[in-house]
Image 1 (cartoon, helix red, strand yellow):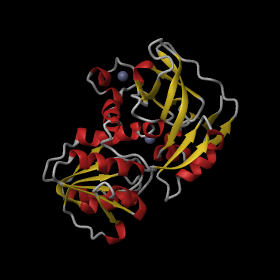
Image 2 (cartoon, rainbow, N blue to C red):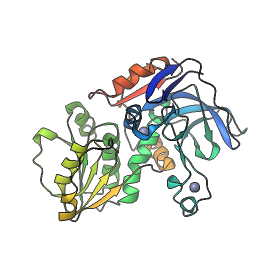
Image 3 (cartoon, rainbow, N blue to C red):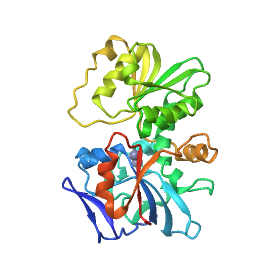
Length: 321
Ligand SMILES: [Zn+2]
Ligand SMILES: [Zn+2]
């Protein structure tokens, strides 16, 4: 099969990578559409020291598996877990001690014609969700995790920092779950802020922002040390700062404001797929217009390059093209 592979830090598009062989309890999925996210770009730069097929956001069709799944359109949770360790047994299977993560850690990913996944990771899609929307289920689940970890109270002021892929989903989730409070997106790109303004959510350009420590909850979706510093300047004393993105190791960050202002820092990663599917099927979250470029799988390297450009939101790989 064709696959976009990283090996010893080198990316290549391989025309004949070995087809995945499903382990027991695994299902073979033919990938139809895959999304590129910030994590993929970080891995391409060496984060996680991963080797194998890149990519974890996808929608596909079951090619080989149990009868009830055959031919079904599916998305899949990225964490492959053991089900036996202390984390799994306490209901925190996303933190499984033995976990593999597709396209990130010890498991081939989805920028390929096929991927093999544990059956329990798969979610069958309702017809109401098109492939172009389905590739947002994984990042939307990650955005929904914010309100699982930090329930928003009606009068709280909430700011999302970063108007990229994740920020645009996170701010919609927070507006949906934020009661009557104020939810604002802070970003650098006028056209991305307009996307949320069309949905009644206020956007503020970073250059127009006078940072004041007045926000009860600040969510950092920037993926940069500079964005984290901005987030620290916005959260009120005793407020909550949710850190949604990883940034490259070695970045200099000043943590003393968090001590002085007694800020609660909350790391946040993967979230509930079923909730994301329901929110999309109910059209509570808008993802139309977030795909800004579409590439063939064979042009995967160009696609990754494009996804790193500042004006892009979501770049997708189409295996059928
Ligand atoms: Zn992702
Ligand atoms: Zn486990």
